[in-house]
Length: 464
Image 1 (cartoon, rainbow, N blue to C red):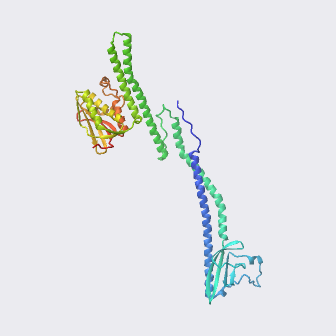
Image 2 (image 1 turned 90 degrees about the horizontal axis):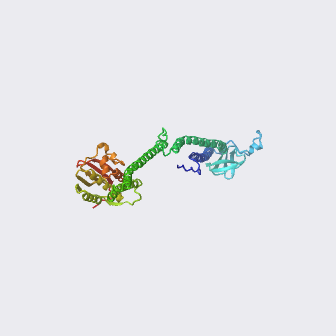
Image 3 (image 1 turned 120 degrees about the vertical axis):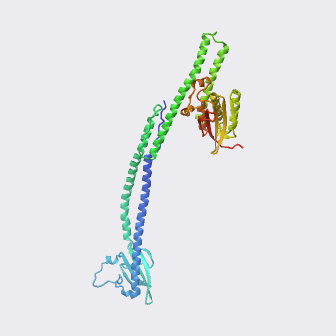
């Protein structure tokens, strides 16, 4: 009784690996997406502040160009009006939007700078510890050149990005966990039919090959796996049935010659004078020859089923094999008219002895059933194949029996097959060898009126 080898647990299951892989990929994607979102938001708000600074600088420059700096009523931040109280802390504050107009090293006007000088070039700067973006415009009025600098605070951009980070820090892990849980559930449901198939296959024993695995209603890979598994089980069941039938038939076939040998031996022992030595020897030789032939035929079938038994395949001249069998038939059966005039040069790649056995089995079968004529021929087709054809002028094979005749131990004429030493394996060997070489065998009605056996083989080399 065979036991199923234990399953190794060294690696995590498909469900775990799929969930972990999906979670890691989504986590990395979400992290990169969150980072890009924060960077894009900061860049967008920074560009907006820069655009605001440029627009404000252009407006002030236009005013200075048209009317001079005097039109700017804001004075400098250092000038305090007597009727307005000053708060030192507020005077030092820099507003969100600050500007100044200078000419040379002199400050002409400013607003919101808290007494601080703004850079005279585009870029960013820090005022009171905060980041500002600066836009500068040059303008001329009445021969004087003025520099207009406008600074816009970037606090809004920083505050927005800072507010986004906690949301991402909370939302992204939740989303990743949700994806992981969803993947775990979905993968489990997808693998449930696979587990059912595995459990069913594990429960099937050698005596229960008729059982089949459940096929899910979906038309996906799992359904195709179940269908393929059922096909494999069907082939195994058919192979097991053929093996049991083969063993049973073989036992039945061997019983007859063994019984004959035993009966002859018992008679010779009980009645030594009832059978002479020559008759005893002849009986033993006849039965042992019959057993030898049966065993050899079974070995050929077994070797063919195992893929040729390791024999090396070579180029085989089929015309030589057919002509040799025609010569042999003429020698053994001088009463038969053996026609080999339609044999043409043809070559196939395969097991030479096995192909020779095919031709011999066909020739012996034709000679056994022929009334007086046998024809052997080779027909090379246009689609790179060659037909080995053997015909006789016997009774032929009925249409209903043309498939059965290739089965093992099938005899359509039981009495004559036994009398002539037939085992019922010859034509089964013909078809098995033909299919092992990529061809097939069939039987039909021939021109001579009897059976016409055709073995089709692929041609791999042309013979000049």
